[in-house]
Length: 474
Image (cartoon, rainbow, N blue to C red):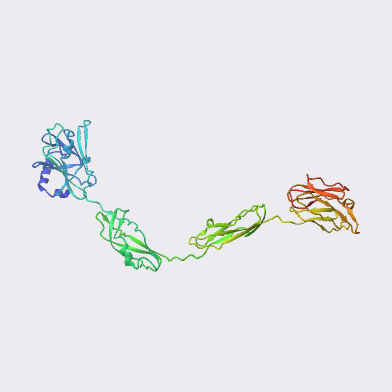
């Protein structure tokens, strides 16, 4: 510190006072043998020029991380620059010299507004310690560009670096959790086993300082048989220089004991959407109605369902069984779900001819039949209709005879005195078919849809239409 230098030489103080009283306070340039040199920064005070050295004292303590000296020479010194900067030395008082690098020096030359032949030492290659005393020296042999002029004496500036400031610890950094395993089979049998694996130092202020740990206290009474989080608190060692822990902060570590897991033995459930049994006819379309799969642990696992079994072919009659299977994450398999799809041939049913008051009806399905059956009518004149055979490969040829209640038989032309029928239904090929009847005989054949009969006519037509399976009469 400045005081360290002040107390070393009472004589220096007397000499200094003498010069202050007899000269202006500003320090004049040093007059060397052949050229002058002046310290521009930092401010300093002349101390002595006894012997072969001229000594100055820098007025203020300097920041150890910002050591900068600027000198102005009366002559240029850049021609012999590399030789001259090697004659600049830095040393700790009472210690060894501190190496300087050429990157620590810069040279500036200017003639206006003032003549400037400036050497700057900006210490970058090494760091000085806080709270220490140092000297920087310009060697007597520093030579001007003319090669003859030199300083002639060593010029020494003594300076001190400021003591390091004290930073407060504001928080300790998190210590990673320690996973002790499962309750009842934990990796650490007791607190001592945990303490043995905890770190012997911790950091604070986001890693700025490392503090030793002398012990870890079992704050929460660690129990390896009980699940939970157990806190261990650090007992700190000596706080490093430059730091203080006025707030009494410390570090903690959490030791985690996991609860013993319960085995998952419950299988998931598969639920079929729609019917489990589906009946179709050859030529129909089958669409999968869907399904869901839910597990008590894994939740919705519908996407994991494997659909197998038979592939439904609606062009071929048969029974198809579709299977649905799924397992949860630990391998529990659901009960297999199945859906049965039955594809049947078109059902063969008989055609039925009906007679009755107000209408004569011939009802046909879309499938071939073996015969036409008779249904009773309330009108006694229409007691019976002759059966005939249906041949799907050809026209249906038929004769219809009506048997009255007295046993007499009449052709349809003579029996129908009040009613003339008009019937519209569908055949197997779903095409228009016309049944024509005239004077006791008729035939089913492909034709355009015909108009209904005229009153008292002996001719009528039965029309099969592709748009409906329902009986349609008028």
